[in-house]
Amino acid sequence: MKQPIILYHMEYLKCDIMMKVLLIDDNESITEMMSKYLIGKGHECTVANDGRNGLTRIEQEKFNVILLDLAMPEFTGVDVIEHLYKNGSIGKHKIILFTASSITDEEIQKLIKKGAHSCLKKPVKLEVLLKTIGA
Image (tube, rainbow, N blue to C red; front, top):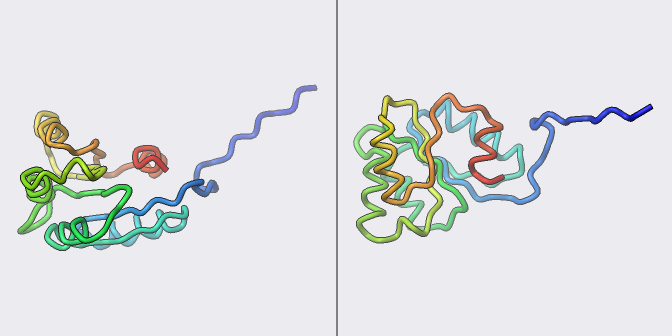
């Protein structure tokens, strides 16, 4: 008799490669939940709860991936992308747009052409998040 194939749910798997992740989102509930999840998966996670602070972290540190909310007050994720694009440093970063806003596919494509890696719409399945960040 053949042995059954056992599949493990992703929640129980730790990552093989630790990633340094910057999570930029003004919603503290989301950043707390996401950072706990990513840390639990073996990653290092830094949180910035506004766009300006996030941009400062990007300019001061090196991250493997940046999860960037687009709809933040005062200095948005789009402002962060524009700043990095204008100073020519956007290509140095893997930026994944992370948003619940009603952004159009056309607007997403414009940001990707400027150098964003991809876009995840909230709410996102955690398995999809891990696959997208490359963990």
